Each structure stands twice: as C-alpha cells, then as structure tokens.
Image (cartoon, rainbow, N blue to C red; front, top):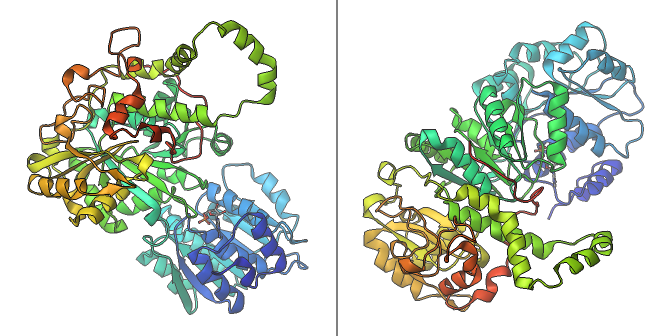
Length: 616
Ligand code: AMP
C-alpha cells in the first residue's frame, strides 16, 4: 500500500496531509504526484472532481515553491469562483506548516479592491478565474512575469464556459512558464487544442470514470408522468429522511421555483444558481456545509463549486441533455471512497436517455418504484425509531427537566406514552400521505428491459436492507449469484428494510422461486412469494399500478389497514398494528432482528425531525 509518507513530498506537506486525515493517496494522486516531484514535465490529468485531483496537482505545486522569493511562481486557473475558493481553501490546509508560503484566490462577483490589496502581500501562488485575472492584469495589480507553473483546472469546463480566448491570452502572457499541467474530466478536441498550442511533450494520466467515483454510485431511476415530477421529488425526499443531497435542475428559474416550493412545505433546502450574488451563495454553502440544509437545489454551473464529501444523494429532477453532464452530477456523491445514490426522475419517453447514459458510465441503472404513502410513513417511522435508539440527551437536559416530565406522566402507561410521542412525530406525514397517489407512470408504457411488462411476474423476498441487501445492485448480485440467471432478467427492483421486490420473466419465475427458496440466508430460510398475492407490494406487476393499501402482514384483504388512517380513526389504524409483528410474519418468526441493523445508510441526522408539510 502506498502511503503519503513514501511520496517524498516536503516534510511540511506530508505533515499537513496527515493533519487533514488523508491516509493513502487516491489513484490519480498515486500516478501524478511521484511524476511531478521527480521529473516535472507538462502533463494532462484526466480526472473528475471527487478523485482527489486538487491534491494531485496542489501538493507537487506547493512542493516546488521557493518560499524565499516574493513573486508569483504558480498560477491555477479555475472555471468558477466556487472552485477557485475551494482550491484556495485546500491550498491553505496543505501549506499550513510551510512558513513563508502565501496563496491568494482572485475571482469575480466580489469587489476587486480587496483582492488588489491581497496581491500586494506577494503570494507565490495565485488561484484565479480567467476573467478576474485579466481584469487584475490590466490594472497591473499583479505580474505573471515569473510564473513557472500553470495549472488549468477543469479545462473542459472553462472551455464550455467560453474562456478559450482568455486562457490563450493568459498562457501567452506567462513568458517564463516551464510547466503546464492541464486537468480535465473529459478530453475533447478543444482541450487537446490547448495542449497542442501551449504544451510541450506532455504525459497523460487518467483515472477512468468507472474505476474512480462511479463504482460506488448506485444509479437509480424513477419513471413518472411529466406533471408529477415535483410530487415525485417530494416523495423521494420523504423516503430518504437522512438525505444530504444535491437536487439538479436545468435552469435558474426552475432552481428558484422548485427550491421555494420545497421550502414552503417545510423542507430544509436552498437554491444555488448564478443569479444569486456571491454573498448569498457563500451563505448557502456555509449552511449546507454545517448541515443545516438537507439539500441544495442547484443548476449545473452553480453546483460545480460544491465541494462536500459526504453527499448521500444526487437527484436529477430532470436529466441533462448531455450525458456527459450526468457524470459530473453523479460524481458529486460517492466521493473519496464513500458510497452514494444518484436518482433520476424521468418520464417514460426519457428512458431512452437513461440507456445512453448507461453506456457512457458503463453501469446498469436500476429502475425503482416511486414509493407509495405507506412506504414513506414506514421509512420515517424506522428513521425516527433509530434516532431514538441512538439519541444521547444532554446531561443538563436530564437534570433540569426529567423530574417535571416524570411528575407529569407518572400515571401514564409507558406504551401509551411511546405511542403518543411517535404519533406526534409522524402525524403530519401520515396526514399528507393519506390517500397519496401512485406516482409511477403506467407500466404498459414502460416495459423494462429483460422482458418484464405483461410477461413478467413480481416476486417478493423476505430479505432486505437489514440483511445487508441495501441497494438494488446488491439485490441483483444476490439473485444472480444464488440462481445463476442473467442480471438483465431482473427489473423493477424495490429494496425495503426487511424485504425486497423484483420482476422476472414469467417463464423464469418458477425456476427463480425454487432456486432461491431452496437456500438459506444466515441460517434463515429464504421465502419467495408472488407479490401480487400479498398485500405488501402489488405494484410493478403485470397488472399495473394497484394502490398499496397497508399492512404487509395479513395476506388476507381483511387484515389490511391503511397507513394513511389516523390512529383514533378506525379499528385498523397504523398504530393498532404492531409493525414489528407485521414484519415478523414475513420473516418466519424472526422479528427480533428488526431493530438490530442500521436503517439509515447515512450518518446524517435529520435537522429537526418531521415538519408539517401540506400539499399545495
Ligand atoms: P477533489 O477531487 O480534488 O475535488 O477532491 C475531493 C475531496 O477529496 C476533497 O475534499 C479532498 O479534501 C478529499 N481528498 C483528496 N485526496 C484525498 C485522499 N488521499 N484521502 C482522502 N480524501 C482526499
């Protein structure tokens, strides 16, 4: 295993990297850093955001700086002010122990005078957006005369944003330039053009998309009708109570409108787009980084500046026109070795685009059902139960309030108290999701590949997230490994806490049922049933979108209750049934396991539990 300490970086840099908690270099760092330290030359690095590319060029760059000199020796060009600020922040951390080293970031959208002052302090490294840099050059606020190293970061994006002439101008004006390091997520003719015009013999380093970020991304798509896109978004957000995500939209106007609509309904989100001034954008990013927001609604350009490592979900409210842009979006999650989910809301007609993107990212996308009301309520219940399990009330809180609480509820039965507390937490969700519509677009329009549609059967299996099958990919892997069938025969996957559902061709159903039923999972018998015959999840079958009516336990329609009903309403209310018992009946009498696992894959806690959300 390669360690940072074996890379022969200056001791101050190795120490800073250790302070930052980096242990091993990422693949692009392993390739680029040793080369740039031992035999610096021009290079092209093909790597997306999230691969650790900033450190790949930043550490060698700082390593080569002569801190005894006071002129600008290195210039990093970035497409956006956000990226510029982030790179600067990273550089400050890398150079924490390098005495005498100064880096400055200059970018548009803020008064130029402050930056002119900072440049007077003689930084050796300047990180800049092209437009602002040229402005400063024209004002003679800095000189590029002694710049030896130039980094073009996200060159493809700078070209997309129309900076070609500015880049040419800047490169022509770095007369002492010896090394040009170009980083880009993609290699277009235009990018190659810059290399040909301005670089000497260069060496190329790349980390392929599939090997870097994308393997850890679970790509999912949800098919709905055009007019139900917003409701589908809401449903997906509600179904991911621990979400820490980015919702991508196509235009600034959509960004504003969708964010406002979500905020009105109590979601902790904020828009981020280019029409907002720099101050507001910085504020949004601060709130997001502090996890005071559960998601940011962003345009592609604005989102380029979001540098957060633990994004759990990327949601494409609409797919981008360019499949390449999809990879930029999805690369926002599953960073630095973590796992993430990229969800896309599509209409039946847009499934075609999904196929194109699949080819580009060389990964199969999993089509999933948009959860129904009952599933959302259930998910929130489990999330809340888990929060209770893991909560650590402040000592002070207990000292001050416990006695009063005790006095007040002394006579109330513990179960009754629990029931009421949980009811209060969930009643708004239950209210909203009472009679919630099925948002999945008609199945006949969208027969999934692998021969589903009319020729498919929907099966239920008594294994789910708690058993370690916590993604569609894992479900496919489990089924294919246990039965020897091809992955493309399985479609419409739905993974739930304790169970899962999937469609298979009718002709293969019996074989799959028998193969799986004959196996055991951790000593427990695997049960496969026809989902149509269960009350649990009937959607997705060839019969089309029947509404999910409630209890997963009964099996007979009499036993069903609607999760949407209020507790005090009828005899078969949500809280009349013990969810534990319901699931237990599915699990062949193993109900105890149900709380033992980790319901939420993600560590983030919801900011303030359930908020009162009302439909428009
Ligand atoms: P980048 O691709 O440069 O935008 O980096 C993505 C994130 O990964 C940044 O927040 C870095 O701080 C972090 N990072 C970079 N290199 C490493 C590493 N070797 N180990 C852990 N995290 C890293």
